[in-house]
Image 1: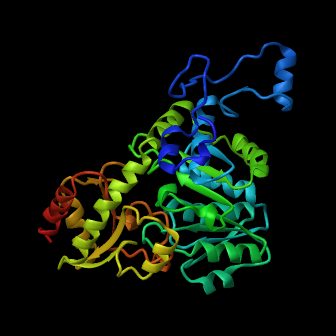
Image 2: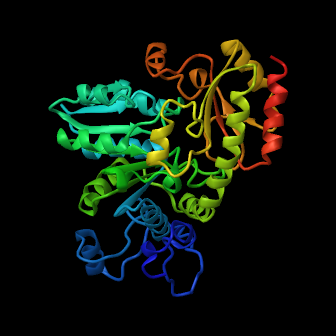
Length: 394
């Protein structure tokens, strides 16, 4: 399909990344091969030297992988994308491509637990330091920047507190300090948030979540605003080895076709669930971007076109009340991850963010009683009834 970028995102979800094949396949085939044969020695040499387009080895390039990468790049409005074996492979590759020993990163304190652990405990071994900051506080971000800051890493809404960051302001700060801005857009997807339009240089996703949407893939992706950076990122990813395989790429590409439908439906459900929880007598507080009680409700309306389906809440009775809810809720799966068609519930302090120290969790406002909920596309009345079954036992 020619000029797919000229179409609406609804149509892009269905058609982006699809290329003509000699057989006329409607869907990109799965090129489940580790290596590709050369026509002759000279042909192989030209491919390795980059003098001719073609495929050598799946870790380097693969047609099925490229189709998915191209599709996500289109959806995010980026120039190029790099599929990775996991969201963390994408995060690690980003840091490896942008930073060197002696560099500094400023990162949202409310972010995915494994990202925080990587930055706090592993990257310092390679001479890269990180300052974690409340990125909803613009002055705090300004104060954290240093002359050697190379990357401003923002997750908005933040995981798991659902705190939001003003991306236009983050872009201004990054540019003023000669740094790059990276945005983890996993919670919102390109349907609800467009970081490149707000000044980001890089976007990352755990494609395990909304982009795939069916809880059957582990994958990540980096999207670049500037195509000139692609060779560097490609070389880093190829040598780190965290590349995605053809079959998982095929599954993600399939998932993209229903992305708009899924995230819109789950958001409708989440709004109703959040309003119901906010009025429940056993709930201490609820954080959901679509609630007017969210401290950054106006920011959410300004930079997002939807509010997503992630809810953070704390019950009266704290952790013990949360345990009662999670052990007795119906319909929900007690499991980590998010963004699938099914509703999930989990306890960040003992699960997804257990790798962070208690002090780091407290700094990020991840209380021991916080419960994180990912709302799926089930019947919303049945979702609420499932929660009610658990709350009634508190």
